[in-house]
Image (cartoon, rainbow, N blue to C red; front, side, top):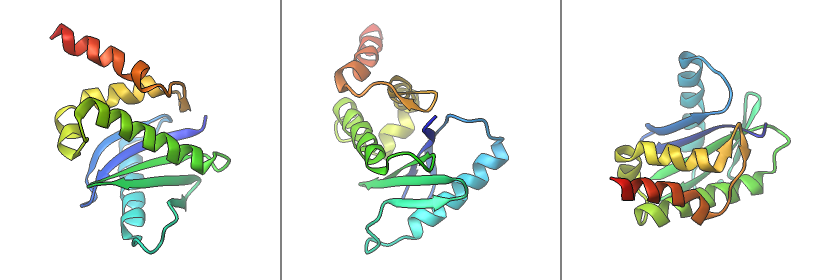
Length: 144
């Protein structure tokens, strides 16, 4: 398993989406999210590296507008591949929502989770085609 968790966090440090691919208690998740968010948000723009080591994870993160996308991975995972995954996730959400923002995630959380479930299974990236990721969501939208 490569990906351990995916977080979407706003600039104030509030978690808007959290998806875990390993079992952690609610208290462990809260503590981990708090530590990672503080560590990543405290870094300024002069620190260009988007990789941080924390506990037994490597955190790969990227800021898009007002949202930080943070992915916790194993030490042996390719950081650039994860940055590309984050970019694909944002592009996919942009295609569906039209320039995704924090409110899109808040008001359509189930769709954001559904996109992640189409892309990642058991911590492994299984789908990278935006059309294949979005087609089930578009079918659900047509049914409503």
